[in-house]
Image: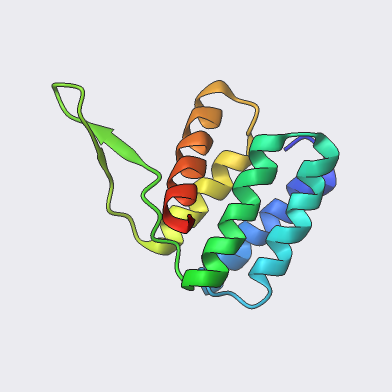
Length: 119
C-alpha cells in the first residue's frame, strides 16, 4: 500500500492477527477501514481481495482459503495446507507491497480462491 496511514493500519491488523488470530475482535471492521484506503489508492485488486477476505471471515469464522500453491517437477500445482492465522498473515504481508509483480500474482490467486469459496 502506498499511503502511510494505510501501511500503519495494515501493521496494526497484522499485529492483531498475530496476537489474537483470525477471530480477533474488530478485525472485520479493521479490514473494511483498510479497504477504504485501497479505494483512495485506486487499486481495484486490493479493494476486491479485502472485501472478499472480510466476507469470508464473517461467513466462515476461519481463513482456510487455498490461496498458496506449490509446484511439482511436472509443473502441476497443489494447494498448500496452512494454518488459518498464518494464511491470513501471509496475505496481509503481500498487501504491504501490493504493487510488486510477484505479490500481485499471489494476491490474484487469493482473489480467485476466495471467489470460488464464497460464490
